[in-house]
Structure formats: C-alpha cells, structure tokens
Image (tube, rainbow, N blue to C red; front, side):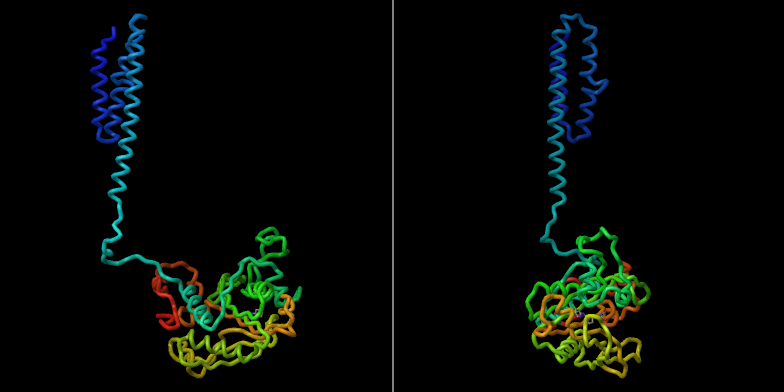
Length: 367
Ligand code: 2NL
C-alpha cells in the first residue's frame, strides 16, 4: 500500500530542501538525496515491484508524478541559482571608471621607432603640401619593374634580389609573375595611372629583398616621393630635399652634395650626400667635414611618364627614395638594423616612443 500522507510529507520535505538550497552544490546534494540511485524517491520506486497490481496502479502514477515534479523544481531552482551567481559576478566585477589611476609602475606600449620615423617624415612632407599614398606589398612584375623602365632581362632586375611568389600566389596572379615589391615605386605608377597631375605624393611602406646582414634585413622600409607637373625641375627637387633634411634632423641648415648615379626610372639620376661630423661617438648631421649618402633621386624618366599614359612632352617630374630604417638608425643611434624586427621588449622599452605624443612641426618631432 502506498501511504499518501507519508508521500505528501516526503514531497514537502524535498521541495523545502530545494527551496532552501543556497547554491548549486547544495541543490545537487538534494537532487542526489531524492532522485539519485539510493535517493528517497528512487527507493520508493523500487518498492513498486513488490506491490499487488491494484496497489501499483495507485502508487505508480503517484510516485512518478512526484519524481517529475521534484525534477522540474530542481531544474527551475538551478536556473535561478545560475542567474543569481552571474548577477553577483557582474556586480563584483564592475569597473568604476571614475576612480583615480593606480599608483606605481604602469604597463604601457610604446611606438616603434619605424612608426615614429614614418610619422615624422610624413608630417614634414604633409606640411609642404604632399599627400600620402599607399599600395599592395605583393605586386605584379609589371608594376614593380616593367612600368619603371626596367627592360625585360635587364641586369637591374637581378640587382634587386627579388622574392618571387609561386605562380598561383597573390591576388593578381592572373597578371603574370607576382613579386614582393622591391621598392615602393609601384605606388607612384598606380597613382600616375589614376590621378591627373599635378601630383605630389610621398609613399612610406614595407619593401622586400633577399638580403640579410648588419645593415640589411629581408623586409625593410622605404619612403619615396614623386612630383609630376608641367614645369617641375631639379632646383625644386633640391629645395624639397634640403627642406626635408633640416626639418627631420632638427638642425638650422644642411649642406648637400648631389653625385651622378644610375636608376632605370630616372634621368639624370643622383645620389645625395649630407654633410656630417663623425669625429665623436655619434654621427652629427649638418656640421663637420664628412659626407654621408642619405638618399637617391632624379628626374622621372620620360619612358616612365609615357608608361603611365601621360605625355612626357607636357609633363615632367622628380622623384626620390630613401631607406626609413637607415635614417631612423642615424637619427636615434641604433647600431644594428636587425634589432628593429627582433621584438625584444627591452629594446622596445629603450628605443620606443611615448604613445599619443604625435610628432608635429610646431611641438617638436622627436620630443
Ligand atoms: C634609393 C633610390 C629612388 C626613385 C627612387 C622613382 C619612382 C618613380 C619614378 C621615378 Cl615611379 N623614380 N623613385 C627615384 C630615384 C631614386 O630611390 O636609393 N632608394 C633607397
């Protein structure tokens, strides 16, 4: 016989325990005590087998009903407890952004000297009216070489120690051979193809050549400049470069020396030396009796202008290119180029720049 009074008492005892469970652990103990293998309800269910069919007809539904109800109450309580735990966690983890800053050393990142140097150089050229242009690192053979007046099979192509992509790699792999750009000049080609002169742009970016020693890394940074107009001339080129060098090295004046050189994309081509003093521990720019090579430049070759769909009898221009890493080393005194890309935290702490302290011409470039 099933004792309905005892069953009611059991039910209210279990439901009270469920209601009083303070956390999920206590609730689980109640669940095991009632519905576990040896739980109070399970034990009662085991008794069904010993009953007469008549008794079982009454006791079966009563016990199973009790089991279902208890299980449902436990699930509901578990959900309440989980929600309450989440609420408590959220409340305890609330960040009060109005609190004063913690005292003591604060971890913060710094600006990499390359980024700082790019910011400084582009600030100077922006002030002179140049726009900043960028382009892809993976380029077609056409933009990297052919458009720049490197004839097919010309030894100058080999001079660049080019990284070639596998035939089917790179976004424009249907444009023939793809390469990691060996200079930023493809961006000038793309700009001349799409913009009407006058063009005044500077192009900072990553460039790649298969070369590695104390002064060469397989990835390095270049900044090139380009001016295209109807009457651009070599005197303007010299003014722009000297204006840049005085501002960048934060000196009153610089002396420059233009030596004849060769680049396929300029004619005439020149290398520029800047006056310096190497007598002390460091190289000082703008004084002394030594010269140091700092960049290459020239008047844009008529073939390059023609390749971009412009008439070289109407337009002419000048261009230059320099190694950002190299002039950063020079300005900030790092001895080894490879450390730039070594990701050593101590090097970055030492040579890095304060974030949010953007270089400006009026506030000082490197302060
Ligand atoms: C160097 C020399 C140079 C250029 C880059 C250039 C680009 C176009 C047309 C003409 Cl699209 N010239 N760029 C010109 C002269 C020199 O770089 O020694 N760079 C590190």
